Image (cartoon, rainbow, N blue to C red; front, side, top):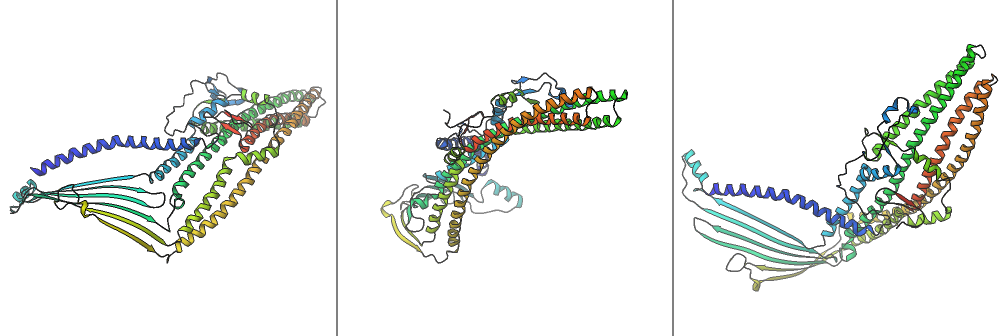
Length: 566
């Protein structure tokens, strides 16, 4: 029966549509990626230091087996010592490479860049020819259909008339937005009807309509019409600059946290050495006390000092392990991944010396104002605000639109697909709209004026902020260098104090407080010495970053200096 046949055809059609949808979703994703990555590539050359590899869907499995295996146990880590046996040792370059491949923060920044490019593809698409097609079909039946017959048998009712009809409708369209603000559109509509019974026959109706419209006042001109597209293009450029700036900041952050972990480890090592020295003095004084050569008060002081040193040691181990766990998350590892950082990196930065960059503060500030990408973006946003004032002012003008419409009717023969061009109708018109209700437009215009002033101040503030960034890192380099010199001298002084205190204590002539103080001061000076080396190197990295002359490649490795790397 007709209804059964139609039902089967519909079922087959639905299966085919579902299969095509599954295939087309992959195609649409590939198409979006192709256009978005192309948009990014088009502007990459405009941003110095921009990465050439921005892929958001790369699945990279973290493989730690290729890194050196640690087989040593470190007593200064106390109960945590065994946990580092079997850990993988990461150099700074290894950590940077892992971070630029697996960091969650880095992935988020890449996705932001991609989404900005994806948004641009839609704005560009608005100025390409846009085609549309809609088709529909209907099948109409009455008394003699199988379903109706079944109902007649069930209810005992009988119908008299029978008719079956099919209807179809097809609409094809194309539109094109002009950069002047106008638009061209073309639409073809065809309706087709066929009577299958109850009086056979068929007829069709249709029309071809073409139109052109162009605003002459409000909305007229390339600058007004393409403002949205221009802003989208510039927004992608800004996001590229932000991403490039993020890569520099991120590389410095990874390096800073890397050395902070090593500094915490070195602090635990120094505190352990201080505890051992204190305990050695305590054992000697306890032996003297047993022989009646010293007092319980003296021994008590050393016992208290030992307890405090033990607490400092335990706390420093906790800080070290906590900072190591946080570092794992920063570079994209899991908290339970077993790694340690390479102690040799501390030796390497110590060998680089404490020299500051060979550039004056005045030169550095001038270069920062010439090379900082975020400053260029702040200035460009002021220009954006100036354009928006013009757009808002244009919205206050009357609407005066010219239109031209051509309509071609269906052929008198009513044959499907035939049009009667000889009887085409042409219409030209002018639409005028007076700006009687402009409250919204007035407020928008005033808002753009305020926004321009605010962004101008923000640009000037960004300038001053950059100057302060450079000045701050310059001062911190000087501070770290002076701290290094002081700590170096302090270590030498306290080593002599400890030696003299130990000698006097062995002869029974010393003051136990001198022994305690000299040992604590030596431990603190040794830690300060390492800290000043780390602080100077990090401040120097931040200095080049803030000057805008730190260049980072796709693995996180950097070059610093006046010239951009080739």
